[in-house]
Length: 294
Image (cartoon, rainbow, N blue to C red; front, side, top):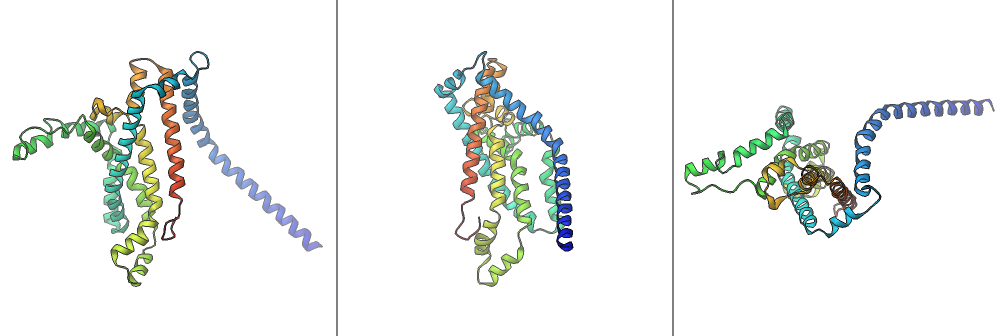
């Protein structure tokens, strides 16, 4: 009996320690939770309230959006640009992340510095730099004209091409960093084991390394796509009138038409659509691959 009572006391003390540790963890999370709640969720609730309260409860802004063909065209352009930007970032970022994960520490640190340099420059400055490069009398067109490859300037700006170039450049680090963090944690002995079992470098990459890097691919694609869907500055400066994205339409409704209710409805619809796509993508991404990796 004395032994059982001592065990009960010890268990009670351990439970008390665990409760105190959990309370400390919640106290550490509390400031960040309040910060996110005040600066993120409150503005979102305010936008939703503006979309359905004008000056009484109404859904006419949503009805106007779903009956307006301009809304569907702009929404289609938004998701087309976001998808193409995501694919471009993945195609360019995957080899860079792979090289960083397998390079010597000095080379990897140098490449990481190059990736992070873009965060040290203002987004507006980078966009204006592309305007200097892609303009009709910009650096690229002047160079091509000087060497005789073209007879007249190419339309590199104020179109879909200019928007994609600018957005891929800006969002490429958001693809490389998740990929690199996952690739760095992949055990290299798995590749060596596959090659020892008869698989060549390409097959070992395709059936071992690539499936194991899918969490980084999923995270990078989700991050780039969701940021692209709400982008404004780069499409506004490098895009044309036929390539208007949802952020530009919302800005137009607010700054020029002063239609806060309709703009809030557009923002809410965009948020809901992106959230649904996010949930659907997560559902698809969790399906098991033939190799057994999830």
